[in-house]
Length: 379
Image (cartoon, rainbow, N blue to C red; front, side):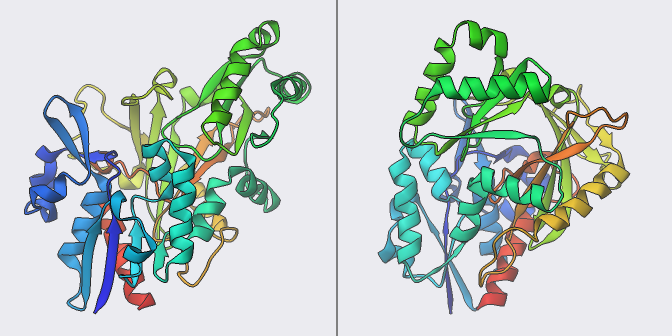
């Protein structure tokens, strides 16, 4: 018997329960106790089902007879518990654990548990540690000729000097970026946390807010602070999130996030778009007055070609290619081309799936299938 433990409890990236009958029939018989293990609060008495729980329950429903699946919570993160299983799937992983506990020590404790246990952990630490080090993977993307945004990286461990940061950012803004606006965000972060847009003149005139911000980012345990020029088109052009399961392209979702809703907690305001070949006209979209747009298929095809090259640089161990990977493409690079160039903005090893906004493929089902296939192959 193959023993599999799945850690759940992200309480976000949720499914609307009212859509389960129409879009997620495999969830109809889910016990209420499972729903409670990962539910996102939408309002008084109103909850959505976390995508991690939907993926886990798909696996329970479709697991082969020689596989036993147990759901685990963040209270069961221990070497002793993990050693009870041949495989542990961290749909709630060390990064989510840090996000929920707001304690960087809990991130490292989770990592240590995985290192010391005998189980095969998915996603492997070699992958997650690499992706969480954005400075590292962006440099590697640049080396193989893939487009990225020029980025300054400032370590936050040890002594930190905001004055030096401002000096280097000013030089970049004036001598290379040729713009007066820049953004900062901490490395190893999600959900727009710590994202900040700055006006260079304001920072130079009164650096107090910037200094306080740097101090706050350091106190939260982030390893580095990243600074980039402000991509003006980012607020008007779709960021295209491409999903890959076990190394194969699955589908894409275009999003424009209202910058005023970033990094402030609560729900982000998002507009959606889909590739021409993946557009589903009769899909029940949430916003009747804000129908999604269509992404140019040639553009998406170019992302698929670039995406395949990303797999050349990511670390691989005995588990092979990641069961899920999301590669996000943003627009536009700060150049003078008439046809503006997209760039690789992020790589995510445990991404939001946007299940209620994914008409072409059910990402929870695809994720569950990919995991069952990988575990079967590795057993």
